[in-house]
Every structure is written in C-alpha cells, then in structure tokens.
Length: 140
Image (cartoon, rainbow, N blue to C red; front, top):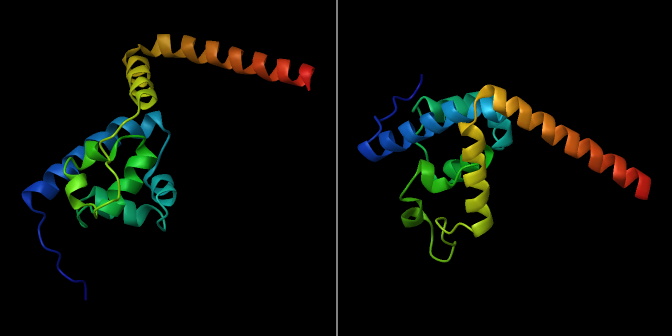
C-alpha cells in the first residue's frame, strides 16, 4: 500500500515552480529527457526525476545541487534559501566567479538569437573546431 505524501508547503511549491520553469527552458537546449537527466543526477533514471518534477517528493538540498549541475544553473535559481540549509563550512553557493557570470551572459545572448542566427553561429563554431583539429593534427 502506497504511503500518502504530505502536500508541499508554500516554499516547496515555489521551489518546484522555479525547477519546472528551468526544466522547460533547458531541456531542449541541453537535449535532455527525464531519463537522461535522472541518470545524470545519479538516480535510477526517469522515475526519481519525475517524482521531483511532479512535486510528489519535495526538493531537498542534495537533489537541488544535482539538478542544478545537470541543468547548468546555479542552485539558488531553484532554491534561493539553499545557503540557509547547508551545514556550516560547506561553502557559499551564491558565490559565482567572474568567468561563470560571463559564461551565463554569453549563454543568455545566444539564447536570445533567432533560430536562423543560432544556425549561423553553430556553423561558425563547427568550422572553428574543424580548423583547430586540422591544425593540431598537422602540428602533432
């Protein structure tokens, strides 16, 4: 017999909504399915991921840290009060390096491009990578 779960509280619901929004935004960009994301989080696949996504199981610190890594977001974007929930000395999850801020800014600029502009950017990037590979083979 299945145990009846308690309803999510207001904070858990807000965290869930942020997680759902990020998931909807990122799944296509990162080419993720619930199955792939679940495995990337170290779980047995789609079922565990789905339980968090559907709010069956409330998000906890460990799940948020795993999900944030897979979704390439800062944990505080899912759970703003995550620092309050971490044990003393575990670091400040709000600290973001200059490089990370610049990478996010660049990613946001890319996301703002039209589909046609992204195709051109992908073509340029592929050309650059192919050229770099060719040069490394010639040198090595």
